[in-house]
Length: 180
Figure 1 (tube, rainbow, N blue to C red):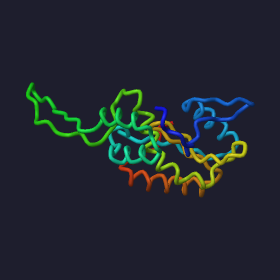
Figure 2 (tube, one colour):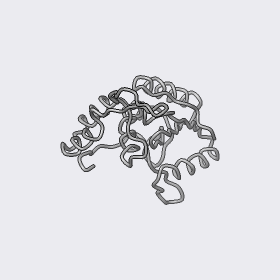
Figure 3 (cartoon, one colour):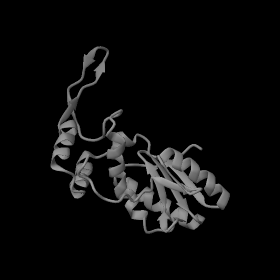
Figure 4 (tube, rainbow, N blue to C red):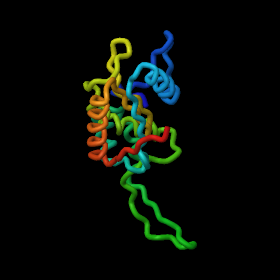
């Protein structure tokens, strides 16, 4: 998509040993390792059934607010709007029903669309206390349905978790502690 231009609230990088590592999974691994060495608190959580829970009307509202290019919006609307599905049980199909939420499983766009959807949640913690990486305050790393909250005290971590939990529920999502 070429019509989206804004700064993400979540960090997708880690600075270590003079190198910037891109790629969220590796960044999280490096962060967790270094955080335990320096006493930083890290809470990993997962959004179960994340792609299925996206409210499409909210997603398209977010894309509109970001001034997404009209052509890109039309393509996405054609992919997602007014789609019908039926379930086959013992060889018989149920009546068709409209699917009004979720992004497509396995679609290359789905993680990015979910990132934009969850950005509404994560923007609410950007000004809270996280850790300093260079001159930037980092409160989280996220990619798709995985979120890592980062703080320098238990009190700050609890504050981050409370806000993210509350905002997630508003967006129709819930958090589960990540198995580590």
